Length: 394
Ligand code: PSV
Ligand code: MN
Figure 1: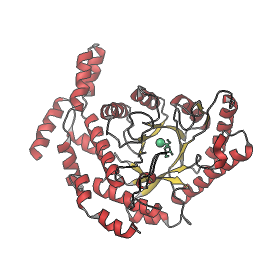
Figure 2 (figure 1 turned 45 degrees about the vertical axis):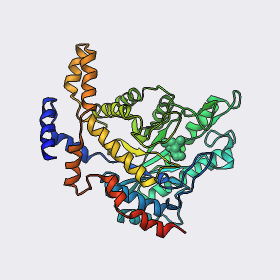
Figure 3 (figure 1 turned 180 degrees about the vertical axis):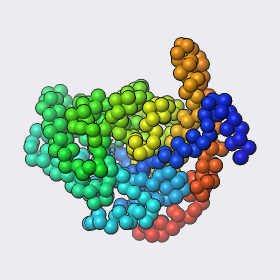
Figure 4 (figure 1 turned 30 degrees about the vertical axis):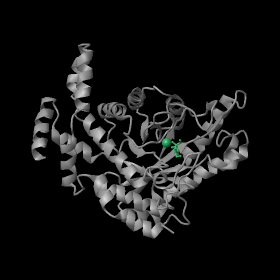
């Protein structure tokens, strides 16, 4: 393998890339996994039983610690309230720290209660808007206890039929509510505003796209940024273009990484959209937004049939691999080709990087950190699932 790394190092030198730079970059690439992706999930058709899936926050953190142990790059976790509610959050910081984890994002749930039938913070009834704001405030309080850096907001708010609601009134209610919660956030916290163009609303959604999210963020202040979920765009949308623009406007906050074919499918990252993800990473690298301390890289996936921990490991390592491939792009050559209006050379330059086998880099990176070379296989051979199935299988 060392030989392969030597050959690749030389090849990359020809592309004006130093291998040390890639190793340095990999140091600053970390991914947060979602607590909800460790639990039993389903579709509206059926929830297939998974007896060993985590049942509460503690078990979800235990499973997330396995993903971190075998990949070495997933020390952060995003939580969802009330799904992850516990009697007291005081011990959770120590609990996660002992597992080598930190909770870095908190997501309020504003879509599962009867009262939200006609919206949460855009509801025409003030008492419902207040209830929704109250719940976000509760999440800010939990965030204060656990020193969570991101308040991650997504709203199911929208209407299903023309005439059902007034777009602009609802926009104003949303802004007013967001202003209230924004001003309640402690200094160490930022707000991430996630957009999604449809579902569960089918006529209009109050926060459907990056433009609307941008308007709200601009109206709120510097600690409000846009969150891009890869499954939240109409088919054919050029996501890398959106990402490049958000970086240029200094308003990109983070990602919910996953994969889709039809709607918001929440499939494992890299199962279908590998080239798209590569092009997104190219923009992140060019815009100096590929460091996890600048951009929150979070997975948002939830499977009804795939085993949860394995699915998470798959997503984490494919994302890391695709990112590494994007680090092998010869940007100088690409720039020259663009200036010379040489489409063939420009596109070939991207393709060459995309088809570069970066496994020798990743193996060396893992060896140096004492992480198994093949995280997925090592996890599957580790016996962890047999161990938890005894504990969890009632
Ligand atoms: C909505 O579809 C979403 O992408 C939001 O991020 C939610 O918080 C998450 O899925 C989990 O349901
Ligand atoms: Mn999401």
